[in-house]
Image: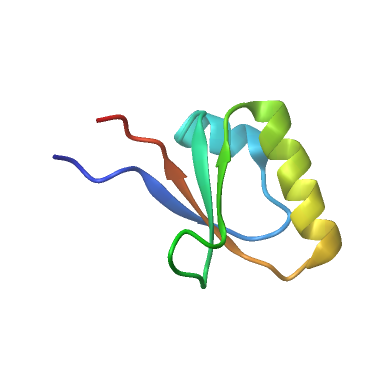
Length: 72
């Protein structure tokens, strides 16, 4: 079993670079959290862009972990 491709993202996020590196769907994780809190599934480019804008507006210093979605 291989590990999912993972990267650290700072605001503002270069969405095109994320798409080239990881593709979609993509898991967006807060740096802190447990039991599934702070984890969001972003299924496509437009959804990810909207999510990054929301995160930036609510907390411009928020950093995230981005991880490719691995299917079983």
